Image 1 (spheres, helix red, strand yellow):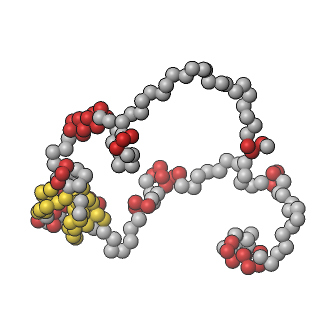
Image 2 (image 1 turned 90 degrees about the horizontal axis):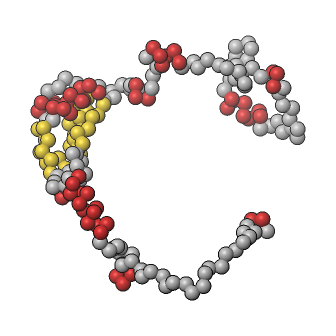
Image 3 (image 1 turned 120 degrees about the vertical axis):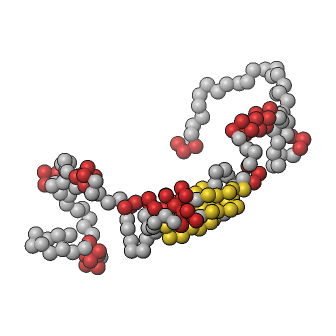
Length: 187
């Protein structure tokens, strides 16, 4: 809160005094003619900074000693780096550390550009594992083959894994209700 005298006070500082006040049974509401902000057009205070490029966003945050990491990610799910030649990456000005993790390699540097250039300089041999022969065509074939076979599930007994037989024909037509039942909530 800011008083007309210029004195400032946080709302939290008023809480102890406010808890001692009696809550009015019928509080008097402000007349809409007295509104200063509600219903009025206001200028956005952040627009000029966004237009001229001086606005600060979360990605712009900087703290002392901060480093930026850029990842060299595995080319396929399940792939792992086997051998990493990072000599050229370490030679990039600003690169501080190279870290091998289970599914990639991280380059830590003073800033984004140094980290990216370091990542691009890495030479990585990947173990593609079971996915080494995987391709879009192979996945499509596997899905087509699976869709044409009887349904399999570990939750269903073997006897019920095929489609059920069609229902027998009815001898009499089903009865139809002409009025809807009363909903439970309205009873």
